[in-house]
Amino acid sequence: MASLSHPPASSAIAVLENVTKIYEMGDARVHALAGVSVDFEKGAFYAIMGASGSGKSTMLNVLGCLDRPTTGRFVLEDQDVALLDDDDLSEFRLRHLGFIFQSFNLVAQLTVRENIELPLYYLGWDAGESAQRADELAERVGLADRLEHRPAELSGGQQQRVAFARALANDPLILLADEPTGNLDTSTGKQIMRMLADLHEQGKTILMVTHEPDIAEYATHRLYMRDGLIDRIEERG
Ligand code: ADP
Ligand code: MG
Image 1 (cartoon, rainbow, N blue to C red):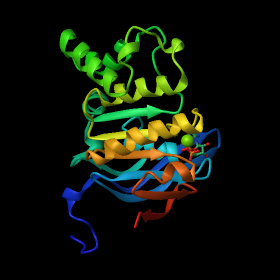
Image 2: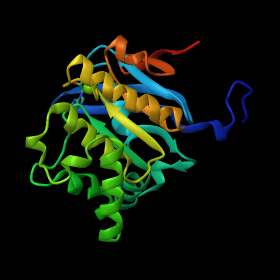
Image 3: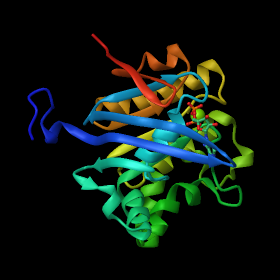
């Protein structure tokens, strides 16, 4: 039944309805998500905040299709994710989502260009086209002169810029970031945040976990979690 307070479907890019994620630890059951319901607006920039253990990463992993809910409904771009089998879910993730992690998660053996190309390789892109796309993205993040380098030869900030370029390779619908500045010094972290803010201004939807209020300032919405539930959402005035 339609509810008047419910925003129209077109404005929400991701919808969680009473989503739980329960981890069994021996006899104990951890309710990492305890029944979360929320509509994420298309084009918004969310900072997901809250104490350690409140469920931030678990929610981001569900939203990023890295993990499935235990119960509840998750709709992403009008697709009910529960209806996709594991292969289709991986394919959906590869086509439509981009990720940045606190620890960069680059492949040590691959060059900068190869790291950026990796999602395109899995998507079956032509080698010449994916190399060209990687070079454009490296240029965009200021690493055009580092294409043949390997991650160990780069600073933390440079590595995160490679990860940023890799996350954009498939021109994702949503960029998901888990503490993207957590391993960076303040000024390097600000560079990454300015890149995220620019991306948001160009219309990208961004979901970012952070526990730092300064970092959350860049977002349009601050979503606070507590004990596996959403405590409140504040929209920037
Ligand atoms: P946050 O990112 O806010 O610090 P998490 O989402 O990582 O919190 O964790 C939420 C709760 O779920 C915590 O109690 C954590 O210990 C638990 N948890 C997270 N992942 C797992 C897992 N793979 N197995 C068991 N418990 C987990
Ligand atoms: Mg976390």
